[in-house]
Length: 115
Image (tube, rainbow, N blue to C red):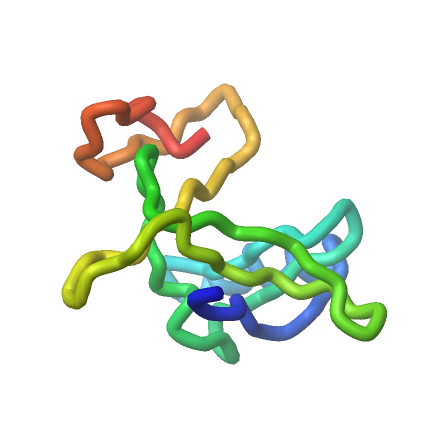
């Protein structure tokens, strides 16, 4: 285990409203991580360092949803030993959409987009 992705646990309808509000407020990045169909963790204002972990098409970590005392949590686990000063990354696995978000991870196996 590397770190838990923490923030406010919210429903989809609230996440949609917040995402729109964040855009209106000029907040360039929001940190909304889907746990399941109904639940999202919003780390935009009340998250920890996990929200700053970048995407890679060839990551050294992965995200896993676990249940602890009936609460779902997102935990980042390492796939391999991680050296000091090595960037921690995982695959965001964004859903496939028509509008592509360019990927700049630089991995040899880069897919070219986050979705």
